[in-house]
Image 1 (cartoon, rainbow, N blue to C red):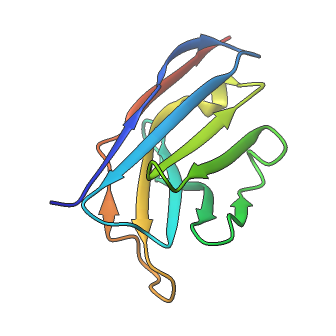
Image 2 (cartoon, one colour):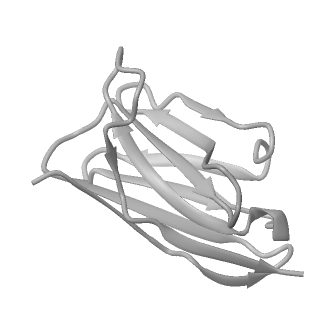
Image 3 (cartoon, rainbow, N blue to C red):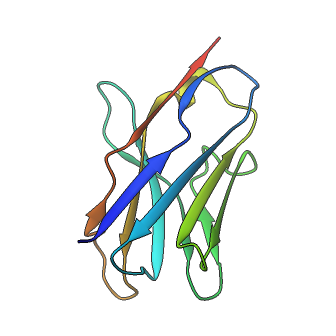
Length: 117
């Protein structure tokens, strides 16, 4: 059974840091991405990282504040979030896909991040 499980969410104050983790089981993915969805808003892309070269890509809204990394031996992907803002409040999801496939076919259940002002 293929699963992606996120952890590490919580309630923090503006300016604080938080690290999210995503563990994949059942298979490996060429690309793992982080997405988020705030109440009343559409899900948006946050960052992704490739398995082989560890190449990372970020949305403009988190670039320079968030860092995505992965530990292939543990099949883990992390999202280090620094200088958090209330606008970062959302449910954060990790998702996996293969190279050459446009859609993310596997998703975790999400972890809530709440940033108070």
